[in-house]
Length: 166
Ligand SMILES: [Zn+2]
Image (cartoon, rainbow, N blue to C red):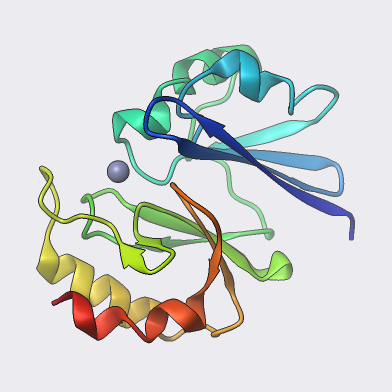
């Protein structure tokens, strides 16, 4: 298996857009802003899916641009490379994309390095967040988390803090 994970920091809130390539397929995750910057990473790649972790403006700013360019609708494509885990709490529509063969998750604003997503925005819920964290605890400690802002971390490392947030 050939693969590559590229992180592109875009927009005022320094949102992480990810370009994940596995063999001949490329997945575009959270194109939040600056389409011309993201576009450079997509040259000569076969973009099969646009995946959005949640619909906050900093994660979807360039979404329409790429939907049009590739004639794709976001969050409609599925294949064996990833599974979708619902993780409401930061927002009602929060999703985590678990790429099992890459041993990593793209978790949007669900979990960050040494932190979790805020719950005080519209659609946020500490009750939901608690349940989502309980659920994600069932996954391996060695999984790498690629969050919507900031650098990556390990699920096992973050699990140790979960109880302190409530
Ligand atoms: Zn958000």
